[in-house]
Length: 351
Ligand code: AMP
Ligand code: MG
Image 1: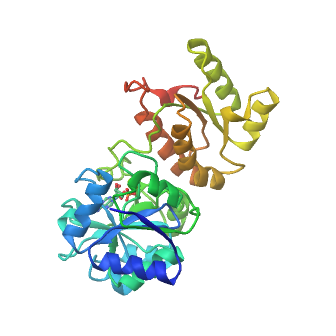
Image 2: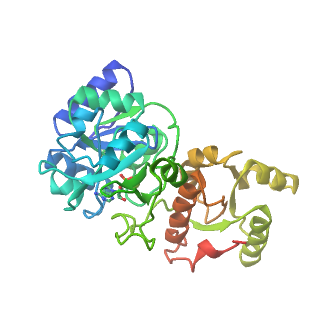
Image 3: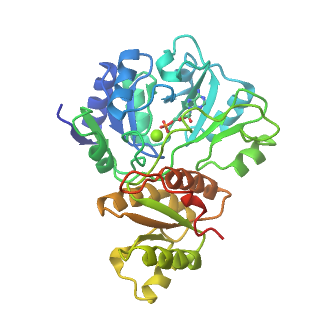
C-alpha cells in the first residue's frame, strides 16, 4: 500500500473522511499527539488499527467525536461527565463512561465502558465532522514506540500500512490526553495529561487515583504495556548535578558518551563545561516545552543510535505529573542494545 501525505486543506479533509467511511485507516493530527483513526462502529475497520500498530487486543481505544450529538449513541453520560464535558470539551480530556450496545467489543477490549474524547484540533474536528461518524483512534505509532508529534513520525512507523496521513505540522501539547473515569461521583485519574489532577480536583471538589485508598478500581487497561521506549538504555536524573554524576559513572563503565536530554538551563551548564552539541538535546525552558519535545527527543535518540540516554526529570505535579508518568514508563521499558532490561534505571541519579 502506498501512503499518501496530504495537508489539512479541504481536499485532505475530504479524502480522509471518504477513507474513514469506507472502513480505511487515516493518520491525523490532534492537539495531543497524531492519531490513527478508523470508523469506531465498524469492527473490521477497527481491526486494521490493531494490525497496523501491532497493538495488543486487550488495550482499549478512545472514540473521538466532534459534537455532543455524536457522543449520544456511543456512551451514557453521568452527571459528572456532563459537567466535565461542558468545561473541558473540545480538548485533551478523555472520559471513560458506560458504553452503549452499538460500540463493538474490539473498541473497548470487551469492557462495559468506553473512552470518549472531543478533540479541539481544527483538522481533527473537521475530519470527524465530515466523516459524520465516531472515530476510534489510538496514537499513530507502532506499539511500544514513542507517540508521534509530527506527521513524519507517523510515516516512520506506519508507511505502507495506512493509505493517508494528514499533516498539520507539530502538535501543540505532545503528550496523550488525560484519561478520567467519569462513571462515579468524582473523577478517577487513569492517565495524567495536560488537564491536570489539580485542575480536575478543584473543578470537581476532588479527584481520585486508581491506586488510592478511596478507590478500588483497577488501573486503566493498556497501562501495563511497554510504552514510549527508545532503543537505548534510559537513565533519569533529577537535576544537572545528578545528570553530571550519572554521566561520570556511565563514562567510567564505557567511554562512549551518553546522549543528554536536558532543560535549557542545564544544557547551558554542560555547554559551559565543554560538552559538544551532538551530546545534548534540549527539552526547553519550561514544562509545556518539555511535554511538546519529549517524544520527538526519544525518537531522535533512536535516530542517533544512542546506546545510553540521560534525561533530566521535572517535578511530579501539574503537567509534570504527565511528563513523569511517560518518562517512568520509558525508563522502565528501556532495554540495553542487546535486549536485556536495565536494572531499575528509573532509580538512577534520583536525588
Ligand atoms: P492510546 O490511544 O494509545 O493513547 O491509549 C488509549 C488508552 O486510553 C488506553 O491504553 C487506556 O489507558 C485508556 N482507555 C481507553 N478506553 C478505556 C476504558 N474503557 N477504560 C479505561 N481506560 C480506557
Ligand atoms: Mg498510544
